[in-house]
Amino acid sequence: MHGSQDAPGDEAGIVEDLRHRFLERFGGTEGVRFFFCPGRVNLMGAHLDYNGGPVMPVALDHGTYLALRTRDDDRVRLAANLSSTSLEVGLRELPATATGSWADYPLGVLRHLVLEFGGDAGLEVLFGGNLPIAAGLSSSASITVGTAFAILTVWERERDLFACIRAALSGEREFVGVKCGIMDPYAVALTQPGHLLWLDCRDASFELLPLHRGAFEIAVVDSGVSRALARGAFNERVAQCAEAFERLKRACPEARCLRDVPAEVVEAEAAALGPLLLRRARHVALEVRRTFAAKHALLRGDFETLGKLISSTHESLRDLYEVSTPELDAIVDIARSWPGVLGARLTGAGFGGCAVIVFRACSSEGLASYVERGFQDRFGRKPSVYSFRSGGGPRELFPPGTVGGSERATGR
Image 1 (cartoon, rainbow, N blue to C red):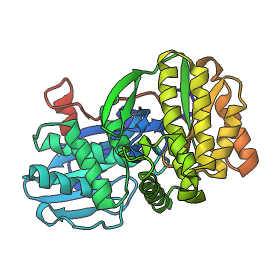
Image 2 (cartoon, rainbow, N blue to C red):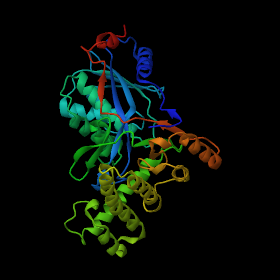
Image 3 (cartoon, rainbow, N blue to C red):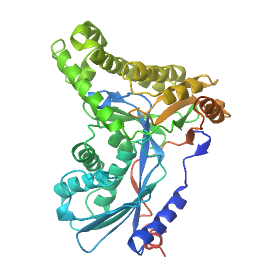
């Protein structure tokens, strides 16, 4: 994956910086353990996960880094590199409702883990990383799955990735209050390097599909438009799809979710849906078709068709689902005019954040600067164009007992 810049920071440098900041925040680094959990970019299946549809996400080699150690008491102290505020609370006095701070994501996970597994040791946790925040690259799932994985590891519980997924979903849905689907935690927990995850969100069945590295590449462009206000709009789309499904069930009684309603039924029930819900349901029905077609195109090496489907998804997100912005539309339009670009679309929930560009590897030279110049001509500033590689799920860095592990863990 090529771009005008690498996402900031190599792993060794990030860990060393995290170690130094841990020393400043908590005092000493003896016993500290380090963990990583990736972000993700979704190629196809836009807004299908909470509608029971198929999705095609790729885990990234950038994400959330955690420095963590246990305490002799039950106190939990949480801090983050990007915030001057920290939180301290007892394991048995965790808040029952969200606090409105960044710490709600790990707090929600911690509440779930205490209920499911019990908690017998306090924690000191510092969060850092090299993933753009609130950009549609699933920084929230990266934090929540990474938190669950790290805590289960140091509490010496079984490191079950599905337990991490459950904790992440519970934290985000029940504590933070985002009515998200299952895609993001599954993507960051289960995807392996060199593959994307085919996940059917109706039954949570999944398989790994090869990315054909070298045949095409992916760039991620951050529009610079904050998604700070996106939560309410996202939950609104979830509610609209739920209402559309309720109205469509009468005409399609065998359907279990909106994904199951064929496009023909959606069109036949246009009057019952009304203009707004018709647009939402039409996007879902057609995106299901596109996503299955994209899977088949990927498997047969038909990257031209894959790219056209990706671009069609953006048009649907812009016109039917109404989650794009002028900046995202501009990135997609500019990128698609570059020779060798196969397709482009906004990624994530929309309302700002990032667009993904899929292009032939031989066409990479000059693409990033072309997108930057075109965007700057329209908006007076440069977007950030990132270079990522495909990554894998959560892991501990320098585990105790490995070569270099004990020395790195103690900070000597």
